[in-house]
Structure formats: structure tokens, C-alpha cells
Length: 372
Ligand SMILES: *Cc1c(COP(=O)(O)O)cnc(C)c1O
Image 1 (cartoon, helix red, strand yellow):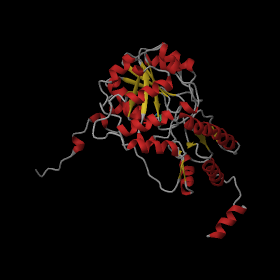
Image 2 (cartoon, rainbow, N blue to C red; image 1 turned 180 degrees about the vertical axis):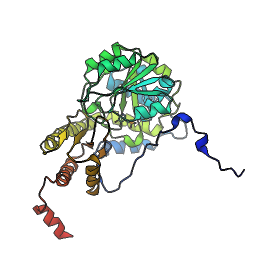
Image 3 (cartoon, helix red, strand yellow; image 1 turned 90 degrees about the horizontal axis):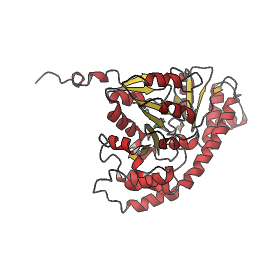
Image 4 (cartoon, protein in one colour; image 1 turned 135 degrees about the vertical axis):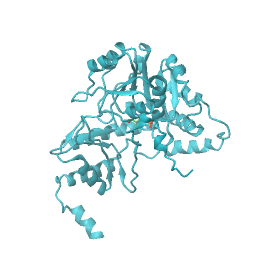
């Protein structure tokens, strides 16, 4: 067998053009690119997890339904346990939703928004249909309802507060869409702890609503991959057909339980981030030539008069990593995660310098160059 084996000839033809998700790792930078919680994991919670880890059974498979975590999530959200499904990050649950309901059908996406809805739709063999947001990033509700009228429409993804634009969707608009479709309406509330109204109260009235949540942003567990969804028990029953049985490992289940037990600590950090977001917004809005969008999340969307890629690269060269989100509807826009106070200050300082808004030769600069 001398013929060279070529996996490209075996791959699913419908995956053509799907590019792997790329993450560039940068060392020694201030990381304001991925909307993570910037604070150290609370030491008391870390220690408690460490203590319990000693007794954690790892020789047996994890609880497939993450019963203890689900019980705590039920107390947190007010949704009965039968209406909660935990996942290996909300990313996994997006794929599970699409494998269960999307394959072979249409999935409505409202760009500019989180890219994984489209990616996972393609992976699941569903057809993503774009219904772009309005210029102010509000949903085009009549257009969504019209597109949902197509008999092949199975799932509609709404993100509130929306990544990367930061605006939240009013509940009346979510209800309007729910009322006018038989498709599943998924409201991704990855950033809900930072602002906007939760759609959870609508669950009672609308069995086609799914609310998606994560521990990766407000609760500081991005590295352990924990997400969950809230839905009618009949929807969860269907999702169990495609879910990997042991999707959430024992360690992550334990850590997420501990986070739920220590919610006050996280609430304090969330409050701080919300406050710092407002401060950062005000300071950015005061910069000439910088256009800033209000945010209900833990990041801020903005544009300057210069190309986004240049600003991104120059910030990176100055040790600040943010995200270039330039694309349709967010032309030349950048997204910065709200960090700790000193990180935000440094970001502002470097941004001003790059935009030529700050005199070089201030005392601090002179003192620093004198030291080296
Ligand atoms: C970060 C993010 C997620 C991913 O959450 P994981 O639980 O880490 O998979 C989901 N949705 C949106 C909108 C996000 O920004």
C-alpha cells in the first residue's frame, strides 16, 4: 500500500470550509480577551475543594446527571431539578441541543453574536440562517418570527446580554418570539449575572424556551468546563438521547457545587466587576474619537478611528490582550473584558498612548526609562 492515505478524501463533505477554532496563547500579557473572571479564585473556596478532593471517588464514573449540582442549581434558579441539565461547559450543551433538534433542519442565529452557534450548527449538520441584528444591536423581532415560520426551523439562538455587543434583550421581545414559533428558543445567558433581565420567569409559560448558563464567566470556573440549561422536563428528556452519559467529570461537579455554596463571595466580585465596568465605560466614552457601546455584561465593545487590527496589535505589543471582533455589524470594533482595577487603568493608559491622546514624557515615563 504505497498510495498515500488521505483523510481529506474521507471527511464529511459538508465540513468543507469549517475552520478549527483557534486560540493563540500569549504569555506575560494582561488578559482581557476572553471575558473570564479576572480575580483569583477565592482562597477559602479553593481550600475547601482541595480538602474534599482527597475523598473524591475517581475510580468510578461520575454521576451522569450531576444530581448534587443540579439540586444546588435548583435552589439558585428556582427551577425544579427535572428542568435542569448540566454540561461540560455551555458549549457542549449548544452542541447537544443541535444534535438533538437541529440536524437536517434550520437554525436561526442573530449576528453579530457568539460564533459557536453557527459552528456547532454546521458540526451537527444543521443549516445556520442569519437574521442580523439592527444597527443598534437590538433583535429584529419581526424578521426572526418570519424566518421561524419556515417549516424546517428547529432552533433559534438569542444571546442576552449579547456577546460581543453587550446589550440585553428586553423580556417582552423574548416572549414575543416564544409566542410566535414552535421552534425551540434558546436564550444564552452566559453573562446574566452581570446585568439584563433573566428569561427564567418565562419558563413557566413557554415550554419551547431553553435558558443556557455557564460557570465560566461570573463564577470563575472557565478551566473546569461547567454549564447548565433550564428547560421544560420534556425538552430535557429529548436531550438525554444524545448527551454523552458521563459528560461532566467528578472534579468539575464538586468544584461547581462548592461555588454554589459560596455564592456570596462571588456575588461580591460580580458587584465589583459591574461597578468597574461603569467606570471603564465612562473613561472610554470621554476619549475623543472613541465610540463605546453600553454593556450589561463584563466586557465593553468599542471602536476607534483607526483599524481594529492595528489597535489590537499595538495593545498586544504593549502587553494588553483584547479581542478584535471586526466583522459585519461590528466593523472595526474591539472588545475588552473588564479586568481588575489596575488592569483596566493600564489598558486605558496604553489605549490613550496608542491613539496619541497622551503626551509622552510624563514623569512616570521618564522615571521608568531612567531605571532600565
Ligand atoms: C463564553 C460563552 C459561552 C461559553 O461558555 P462555556 O460554558 O465556557 O462553554 C457561551 N455563550 C456565550 C455567549 C459566551 O460568551
